[in-house]
Image 1: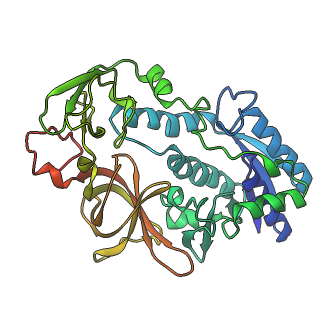
Image 2: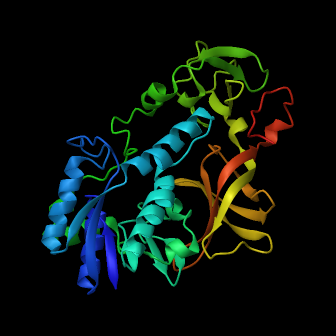
Length: 375
């Protein structure tokens, strides 16, 4: 099998490529240049896709004895991932850029070019398992990335290989060391790759500018303060609210709703964060077709955490999700991923982009502004 190994410059993708070589496949390594002006060096675990990462990927390919190329996807990445990220925050949403990168770049644009060049599959260092078209959680629960892969279609999964998903991360590092790969101890990147400073609010501020608005109380609707733009907030946020006085009961306030059109950020008690129902658009079903009856599953609403048993019903607009236990910190723009519990590792059934939610306190406080994404 001819395999294109996407090599980020990290340990996971290097071992993934090594395993494909060891399995006897015809492997070619490729590093994606995702920035028009990549930084010379990353700082520890901050950022990725730097010149250093490209060099690390090339050296790993040399050790493995495989051809290596750098492909320029900077323009498409800027449009499909960075611009999408900025637009979503400007609309009061909380997007996941890694999910969008998988959907638009690695398993769409990259995979399409790979197929056009005669490759049979694309191998990456994602922590997930795939067999006979069934996508499952990784063995290493702490590193599991099935959530950000749940936007892939059945056709895209049919051209994907995830060689490291069956192995815990410490063993991957040990294997890299045995294979003589210099990235064996390289720190994992945990920040948004195009914001290596880690300061998302500052990054968005330079692109969106100042859009002042009011911070209002979820119970009374009274104005508590002001802000410079809804892009500086996300649902469930507790710090950085810019309020001069605490809540009357002395308890913490959280961001409970964001209305980008009105420019308001609503804050309230933790009880206002409980969500019992979700609405989702743009559903993707990893088996290639939507369920023809209500789906009993486990839903996950964040990359790491936010799980609850649920019933998913397909609608003309997308899906409606009834949670059997409330979740907190649910924001529009995030993905709701649907899993089927399985002894061999939870199976990914599909996903949808969260477009709305309903809170039990919505009906108890009709005067409270709820924003366009509440029902």
